[in-house]
Length: 195
Picture 1: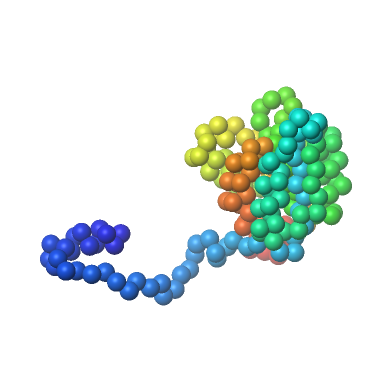
Picture 2: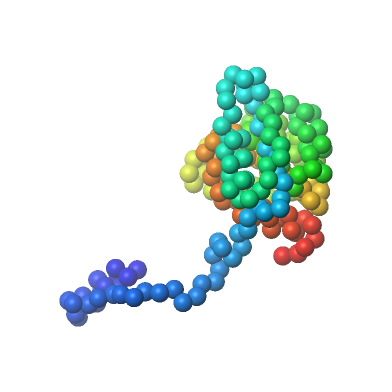
């Protein structure tokens, strides 16, 4: 913007100088509504038939853990399981009173074995549609195939939410970078603490 102003004014005065730009005040923007996850406990569940058999090393779950820790969440559970709907539902039920955030990675696509959305819908009481929509829109801008994610996000109880993320490392990183700072606010609303 300043280059445009300079370009328009240089015909009047070739010695024009733009200097001493200071921010006097700022309102709005990311820092006004993004919060870290201090005091929140989290679990990361990776869904992968092959990784659960040890055929390859999980990377997406480890990225989720690192990002949650960077947001000051305490990660108290990490597990790699096969794409098994009943197993995932049982894990949700066993964790819902122990953690505030459950992140799943993988099993959100169209194959017969992709079950994370169905399992999640069986345990949540309210869907967090805005989270789902923005993850797909943001993902589509970077990787058009991400529109095929059926990821579901929702409230399990007044003190626990679940967020399905894709199985790719990049998808986990991009989505948590975008929504990670909003998770605390979602929890506050679920707890009845208002906006």
